[in-house]
Length: 272
Image 1 (cartoon, rainbow, N blue to C red):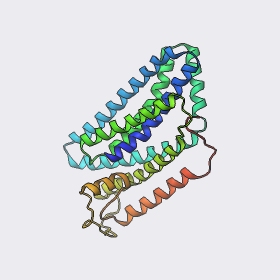
Image 2: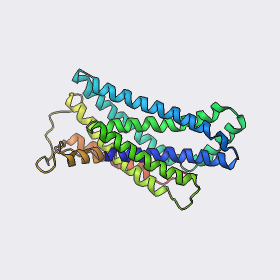
Image 3: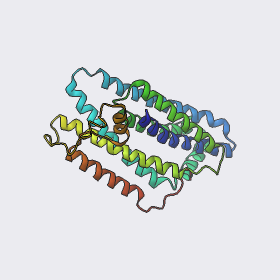
Image 4: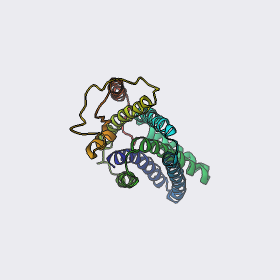
């Protein structure tokens, strides 16, 4: 549940901030009546994202042949790592101009006067984050119960909506940059864990070096199957008996991703 909460909170706040920027600028332009178009696009994006989540989870839970489940789960984990890393670094790089860029697109949409222009702006902005969130949740929550996954998602999105409402209210006291920094680091650490899990799946299939003896074992203290072990595994990629390939991959990815995220840039606040 914790990993799902972290994912949906981080991605949900991005969605909420984008919507807050659009709606606040519409209010500034005196075009608040067009807000319904924004919500239309948002609703469509939410439906597409939920449908994608249901479809992926259905495939994973209805696959009868076990040999297809392992490569599918491993592929989803690695895909989530790639997209998560790219989107986290992209948002850090684009945060300086995202606010002004959105305002320009809103102004164009209002001037155009088409319901579909403004709705499509909201749809594209939200569905990108929605699909990204689905991939992260699917990749990291395969061992969690449906109730825990849904509960964590609802909790995370609720908190994100509250923060979005505060931003829409025009509060200058809410500094989101530290929040996004902390949450982005947590997502990078979780991505490292997904990488370890994906490697484990492909090692089990014999597609990566196998037969490597574990470097150590903490199974007697905290096993993978315990509640604490499952929590540590979903958030940090904990494995009670890791092998050399998994350890090296975890260290190399984490060091590289954190270096790329914290290297000097000219980015500013995500709210622009």
